[in-house]
Image 1 (cartoon, one colour):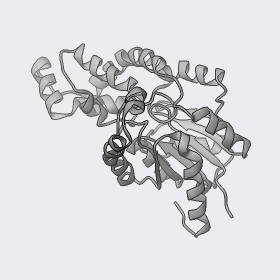
Image 2: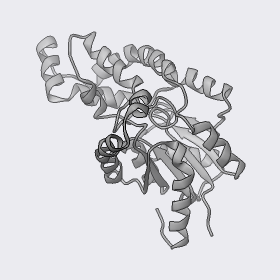
Image 3: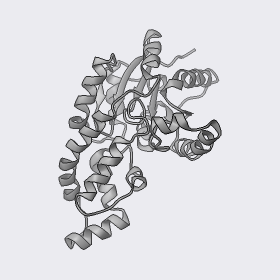
Length: 268
């Protein structure tokens, strides 16, 4: 039976930063510095896109676009997004490092799958400036992916498959996308996996779609968790996830289900 040979992980909300909380505060603060109020919920809407595209999408939201035009006498432009990105990167890097702890269970799962011979790479919507401290910390803790593709490392980032294709090459799995799983908590991140021909696994509890901190998650009752997860699971399934799990701690179960589907003749 054809087995899964590789896993491509996302970062925030998937393997670090339970709840994907670091980017949200930074986006809210960024626009607040420019006298525009956005909510956490609004900041989450474009999550998973490269950060320049995320800022541009926020700037084009009707309420933000209107406020920007009132303040500046013109529409929000791509150049405005570029300027804000330069301001955002150091803020986001600090926030990301503060919330860079691995999602519970990740290292154990990584080590288990590594022992079974699986290979690993990663993609992220973060820029390389934001990611460098996280990469160094992850390496110190024992996570050494074959490649980390940041959104500004490739000509076309998510939802384009270019980043995933670079990961396949780094893992020496070119031409074997059907034996690789992309694990992500956002629609754009799942889309890049699908576009490359990979299986996809959505993470619901630790990700952007739910947006709870680890403390909130641990304090909630089972019925509360089940109800809260329904829209998150639906969003990930609608985005094309072949399997949906609470967090990466459950990834071996998802891989087993995918290998059963492969045995039944299914393809991504």
